[in-house]
Length: 524
Ligand code: ADP
Ligand code: XUL
Image (cartoon, rainbow, N blue to C red; front, top):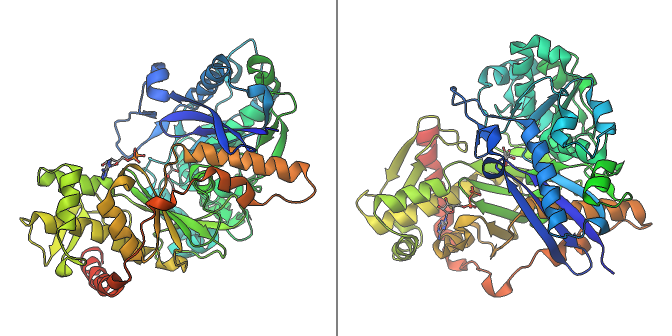
């Protein structure tokens, strides 16, 4: 038997697909479209439209639709087993929003396979471009929403996060304030995820709980739109939204457009999409509280599953809903690889030399602390960039290499305390997760085993696993177990696990106190 499921991932720079075989635990097909390279006519730089105002970041939603046509054509031309797929779901970059007029439902229901998606959807937008997560132009609107709702903490307690510039509510408010006619013409506001799910399912698809939590509009515990938040955002907003619904909701069969044109089965089910972080949580197998991922990319992110809804009192972290129905936390540290690279480059080193230098110093580096705010930092909030050293001389190369990594790992430990989840295993992913110095310091600072994970496209994989879970929930009498679905796809290489040296615990407990004091001095 082989039961196949398709997962799509509409990210900032690309649209990708994986088809998994649930029974063999294998990925059987994979394709991708790069927006800037494959769709240059949209004029984006890495998927984002350039703007004179550096705070503004928008993307053309028709580009995402056209990418869907290109991707399915590639899958079909590569003889991917589209006809055997039982259910489809997807992942969208979080927070981005699509503004549609009253013509959209009819257009979705009548997608004509002899025309392209772009031709089919032309004229359906009340706003030509979509603000995405990189946009930081809504500071004023964030303040207005927080004022209307009784302050930052009140917004965080109600919606899971304080008002953030990139979150959808402040973005909607800005649109309402700057283009009242466009806002009035908007019959429906979708997220990137629900827009793509709407195309796949031939009708407006609801927003799911996971992505809904990234809007500053959903009551995080009731999992309903918060009337208070909607009122603080823009008038008449409830009528323009669909959902929020559990992440395993099936909207119906997939659109006949994809059946006739690309060979999907007419009985394949369309499952609501979610955000990229909730999908990655599943793609990395983070389904138990205490399993945490540290993704070491351009920025570093720290995320994991939580059973209780706990909101960060300092307003630095986010609470989303996990696709399992639990909660998930996410903290984003901007100076991740960026800072490590800057230190490495300052001393003219390559990565092996950086690693050797760091290992040359003792655990705890005799109390040296380096605060690596090469760029403004999100956590802790530091608006004015600057590097600060305590008991550390800039000319001591090995000390600086070790200090930057120790500071970053201590920062993660300090700023994740609010979750009240002691990690029992850490999955390290991203470009820097092959660095042995970073893994050693990570395991010792957190006193927790670290597994290096090689999951290429965790968001698309997570979407395919969510499609499988929704399908099984829908078709079987007994609810499926997430472990049964996820475990075969998350390969832990036991020989590569890095285990903490218990003798280092005390050193890092002490250094954490010192680190926190240094941080307080700089970040307040
Ligand atoms: P993103 O998804 O943000 O594009 P990646 O997960 O691809 O990022 O990671 C890219 C980063 O990985 C680069 O910024 C680079 O500095 C870092 N990196 C690559 N190799 C190493 C290494 N051996 N040690 C530390 N960092 C590394
Ligand atoms: C999360 C966030 C990004 C986007 C794009 O809050 O803004 O991770 O989801 O990847």
